[in-house]
Length: 86
Image (cartoon, rainbow, N blue to C red):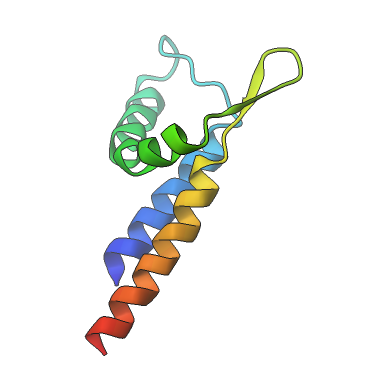
């Protein structure tokens, strides 16, 4: 199930990159990669974010649980699909 593996990998990359600020006026290649990554993963994450909005922490930061929930649900769907196929 390469689709689920690739999607899981992209979400994990997005989680890691969320810890680093991306300057749109800095390195254009990195910025375009981050924008592309967001475009690929946002359709998966948006429904979970609407269920559990990001929590405000500290002095203006947010903690977003949608990628973690999406990874759990994707794993469950992957297992279900594998059971239906086999």
